[in-house]
Length: 236
Image 1 (spheres, rainbow, N blue to C red):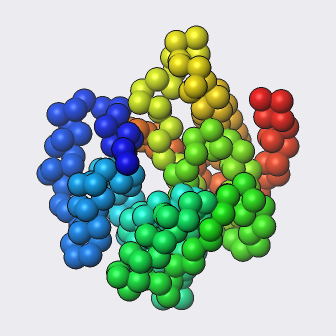
Image 2 (spheres, rainbow, N blue to C red):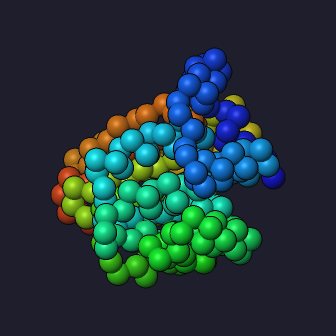
């Protein structure tokens, strides 16, 4: 299995190497999980992104976290360590193999009691969620970010943060679509639509972060109905 996102960061290779080698590894079982995933090429967030998430969640300490894209459970395990007493994390993944691997990792790290796994397509699960979250981390199918976004906003508390991974497409996000391989053009269009929409919206505050293949942090400033945005993709 190839973790292509690990090999297409948007900053100079020597700086990436520095961020991955100079920043402290995670201790204990979490660090071992990260090491094993990287050795096997299993897709997880790169170390510089993991360090950033670990840093911001330390003082933020969200009580309820939602993750879209579990993979083997590394990022969920990282975030769950910052849950205060009574907090919980819900994570969604459509692949049975990933679900099973993540479940075993959560048990190994002693996190099963605070993490709820939902197996299925996020497109089906997100509309059914009936609770509110302080923090959402989305790291799933890039062509689906725009589609998932209104549902994320619906369940995100006012003042809460949505963090979205891999938004720069290896640095090609601003390239003319005619230069993009046809198999990637839908992702290219949807990501640009997503970025343009969230950065211009008056109910949101955003920050772009050039770690890994790019992150965008989105804060929900006020309640707003984002569902009409889905009309823009009905004929895509």
